[in-house]
Image (tube, rainbow, N blue to C red; front, side, top):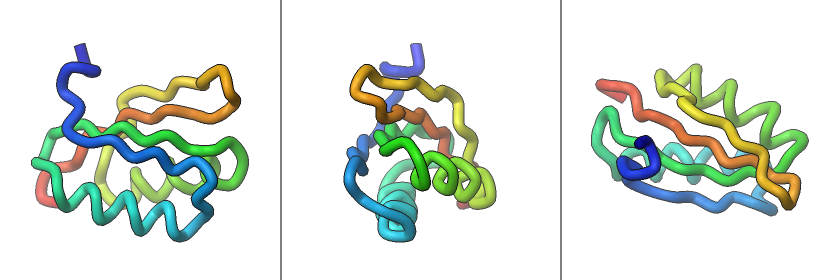
Amino acid sequence: MIEDKISGRLDLRGVMCPINLVQIKLKMKEIENDSILEIVLDNGEPMQNVPRSIKEEGHRIVEVEKLPEGCYKLLVRKGAGV
């Protein structure tokens, strides 16, 4: 189960671009390659920009879940060599 392999969590509700992207990059540096980072984002601009930027950085989104409060939870696998 992917939930068992989560190496870090970021709750970025209320954090706008590009600050949320900076926080994600810093957290990704802390975890091992192939580890999972759980990110919670607001709907709207963050959900439009963050997934695209994550992929451009060489990481892979393995799961997206819409939460009852209207935000989203992303599980992101850190790319090798990033």
